[in-house]
Image (cartoon, rainbow, N blue to C red; front, side, top):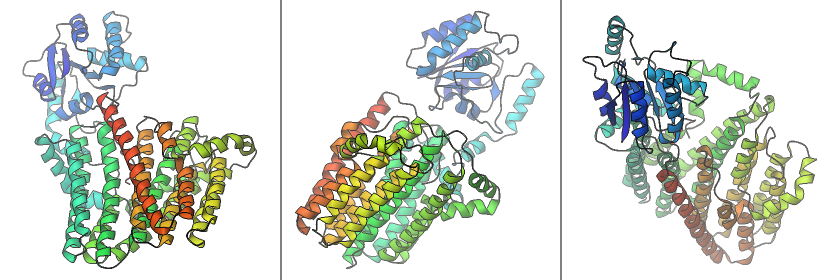
Length: 605
């Protein structure tokens, strides 16, 4: 339950009390400033509390935005201020100071709520002020101003604004024009029936898994049904975020579910297509695994670049300025968003091709499209990095080191290589990561299965990986290190499974890469949520990227092809169990202890 303390002179006919109760507040009128301070002290420490001026005139959604968003410890709009439990002390201190007559704002601001907000600003407390746009929020000083404010409220459709703001500001063409025009109404329908974003997210996952099952039948009817259900799953995927924005139901757990389920849905669908193709006598597992590897590496490029640059100083470049200029031209915005093949365009393409063609054609189109998108985005980011003079922070360097996922072997070698790494040129880290990774993948591809050379190359890969992370990753192109390491590990698994040339090896490799990729995505989402990287014991338990690569190449040397398939299966199950159990434990615990709610409005994935 939340508590709203209503201050100031009551206004006959005002609906403010009813509006606050409709938002879930227990309303307690205060006879004066001293009484408001007393009421504030009586509110249980674990509850949200708001101070609202009784003269407030405005839209209900303005109050909702200002007083109920769980992402911000302190928030305010004209005439109202709120604090979550973690920020209660700051609110109490500001109110006490104002009531003592020494706040310094009483002459300039008449409303107690606004005086408290000004005091919080003076303290540097970080008060969030939502963008209200055309919504009205005011504390009229006289009857004429009140009438004018009420007319302004009547002139704006509160619900239309709320529906429009439920749609993500930056999205792909398919999502913006083919999904969101009606999915927002589905979100409202869900909100009015008490459904939560997490329930809609789960429904989207279940729908996608059923779609994967339909694709696995290998029949034309199954493929058509799979395509339709995949689109339905994506509609629900859009709906859950719109429901969160519509009803302000943001949570740490919800953000994690939304992100991880997106990957689970897409990769499960790849597996379903591969199973369906196998029923028809066509082995497309190499293509399915290749698509997963390529898509995951694309995401790692996005994550690493953003983490390296989002808090960098002097972070400008001519390339970035040109990009911003192109974004000011209407048609180029949509062309540039479409060619990167975001999730809406990608899933629409997969769904249509599944229904009308074959799994092989679907994967060919997906691989070509994703390869072009990856080349386009990576080239642009390399140009930006080379032309900007950004100074990267220690936080960014740590994030990149965490994304590198170095295990005990690379850590131990890196300690011995630090002095050497400091003397090398700035481009050394990405260069050695690329060369070492390319060497182990190429060796696995160009030698016979069971030969010793991939294991020798993997030993060299341990050393190059260690050298790549031996000094802080603050160079212009050091954000390329994590994606190069991901490509090396995943590519080695793919190539060795294909070279084994035994039935079941590639599906086992698909499972192993999926389990490891989950761990890498989970690392990203923890960093984005300011929760830090996964614990070191977890990284050491599953070996780090270089340890897993070395183990897999050694197993390929020591085992027969059939035994290697079994070993890949065992590794996949073991890694999946360890990372899933620890990840679920962490996110559920974070949700229970009230970790700050997050909501990602970044680039469409």
